[in-house]
Length: 170
Image 1 (cartoon, helix red, strand yellow):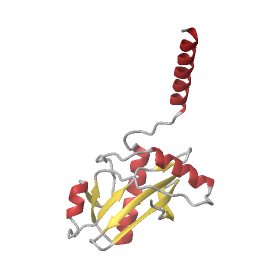
Image 2 (cartoon, one colour; image 1 turned 30 degrees about the vertical axis):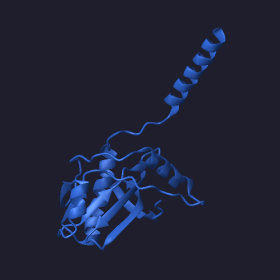
Image 3 (tube, one colour; image 1 turned 90 degrees about the vertical axis):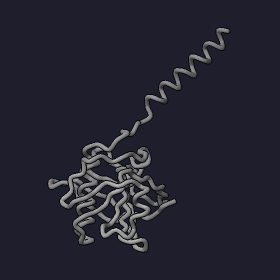
């Protein structure tokens, strides 16, 4: 009986320690994530020459397969990205252009819309929160869709879009 109690105590202690060391991602996007979203979406609007966009009100979490040779700094971004699940977006976006949040089901039926439809993921950050990784899909018509992961860097003037990192989806 004592032996059984010792084994049970050990298991409970190890479980408590391992649970305490697991990082938990915030359930909702924080102010830094919304700043990244705003910078990315403003840049997309400028590059595509649009003044109004429809944004899917739920983040999307596509899988990401990492190449064998990967910069450790990017690995840190990916590690944070995969910890976060899809979540609803709020109205905290601060865009230079007008936008409207729409549901995923609405986005499937609105391809003929004059406004492009954008889907975004949660944001993966490095430990100092000055580099970020985010996925976007930009759909203008049923046959035109641009999607990719991009890195972003935070500087004195805010977040800037870096380069397309990868299109490794699985």
